[in-house]
Length: 407
Ligand SMILES: Cc1cc2nc3c(=O)[nH]c(=O)nc-3n(C[C@H](O)[C@H](O)[C@H](O)COP(=O)(O)OP(=O)(O)OC[C@H]3O[C@@H](n4cnc5c(N)ncnc54)[C@H](O)[C@@H]3O)c2cc1C
Image (cartoon, rainbow, N blue to C red; front, side, top):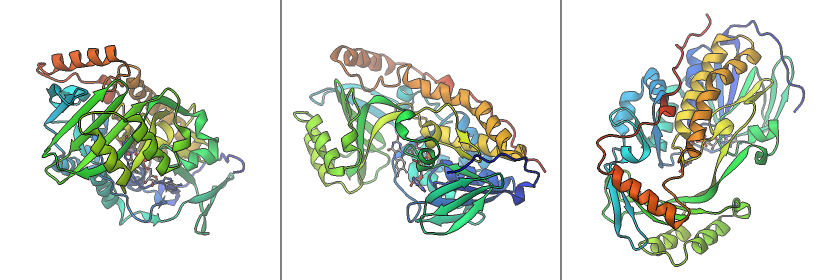
């Protein structure tokens, strides 16, 4: 990577070209808004096709307004998972408490939506696929910045120049690494590792989540509908991140099996299923916290810049809001330096508030000691009788500006 070019760009949006790396949530959402402002947009995605992983994600507060302005809120409401019950179990599988999901996560019933990740990614892609160039099965190899633009060499060998490049390539962003250096500088480990995979629904669960806990360990099964498939989730507390397991799927399976040795309820069967799973998603629980989200003509959006961790349930909402604010900033400033400064100015406090949810009881569902687990159970039993949800102000803390591209 060479110098970080800075020049005042007087071209119209239509003449400005943007390359986005990553076609999950933040990437296509950004592509939609930039195209709407008249930019010429290319999206490169390393997967060979749109990834349709179906784990449920939430769209809450300010992010709901973003999807409303995109015109897809009604379709997302149709796809809403509508989980009806969260049941918490003790070590032996006895019921501790059974609650409405909104009471547990602080979402607003009837307003916030929860959909399969693949449903949202598919909808966003469908919104832009006819207007935006998608390069599946490719990725950025090198970025060279100058005053004129960013020269990009792709893994496939093709070479192109863009005015601006945006990394929307997730928590372990390669764009971030090539621009700012190793992830360790920005990764804040939150004390857990987790695994997600699907299992057959031999439990007769429907529209519900069941979670088993002992201190420092949790196993959950989520039936997002009446399907014959359940999303299984295992998480374990560990003071130090299990770095050796991160790139080795056999090591991940062994680590989980050792962590859950001797566990009750259905856990032994889940560990057996984990060993066979062909869709295992394993990671540590952590956040990305960066002092700046851009360098020269390259910026980051979504998990790449500010992953908040699943403990907040706000990853997708931050990605959608970040994409809107970044697109609006680029559309209202001809100079990318001013645009990126506006993006940070307008979105950083919202991001910080949502990342801070982990410091304000974000990990309450996964206590690491017996007294903390007892305290959580007492809290859940009390909440089970509460009439309404405790809404988290952070979810709606940003009032979106009007989308107002320069002519
Ligand atoms: C298949 C999948 C499953 C997930 N499951 C969970 C989950 O269970 N729990 C959870 O908390 N979060 C999960 N996430 C992350 C969660 O969806 C994010 O918080 C949220 O979607 C933020 O979206 P994003 O677009 O910023 O990043 P992501 O959704 O992570 O998307 C990043 C995209 O960039 C692509 N990409 C990565 N590297 C490159 C590269 N070098 N070049 C080009 N493209 C690249 C990826 O293939 C992906 O499509 C998952 C993400 C994916 C892709």
